[in-house]
Amino acid sequence: MRAPADSDIAAGEILLSIENVSLSFGGVRAIRDVSFDIKKGEVRAIIGPNGAGKTSMLNVINGFYQPQQGRITFKGETRTKMRPYDAAHGGIARTFQNVALFKGMSALDNIMAGRTLKMRRGLLWQLLRIGPALNEEIVHRHRVEEIIDFLEIQAIRKVPVARLPYGLQKRVELGRALAMEPDLLLLDEPMAGMNLEEKEDMSRFIIDVNDHFGTTIALIEHDMGVVMDLSDRVVVLDHGVKIADGTPDEVKRNQNVIDAYLGVAH
Image (spheres, rainbow, N blue to C red):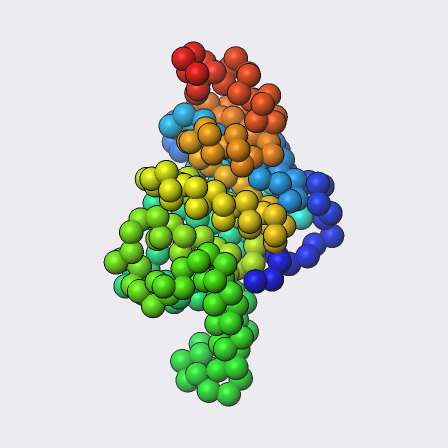
């Protein structure tokens, strides 16, 4: 599998910057004047208790929600609003808290769906599957097979995802996101509902995606052991407000985090 598309931003430089973002739904303020950044090549965790605004923040980053205040700079381009298609086309891919796959389709076809933005032939050519369209499909299918090998799901490549256990469905969803060859990968609770073995497998794949392909990752996760092991930096939200930001060691010693999220017993 190829590395994400190159940009002018070097490793360690800021890939995405959130500046004073606020988001409200009626009278409910989901995010309040939050600022932080994500550096190219890092694993950046976003944590906080339920209702802290974590998923809302991911939805703002990939254009599903439009903030009432603030701005986002991605790969040097500043915006206040973006459609999800524009975010995907610009290099942002994501997985979801609840698995969002085409349940009647095979694992292979679900991952192929992630190649849609890379295809250049029109719908009619793709339906006919002849000539240039067929050649293009062969190239993209080769990329998908590389992802299937990388995620070690060869045995279930032709299985409808509805028949797969939850942990493997999560892995297929990760594969679909990787098929987009993103610069920034957003993972919304990728290990929710998994047993210990499944969490260990998913943690390994996240590390490999980051190490081998240089993919920048923003991660929401409730398992603090996973967060502390995988993350380079952690930002903590509570009731839509940023209460801490730093390395895992700095964050876990922060009294505001202990009080709001980890609990005094930890």
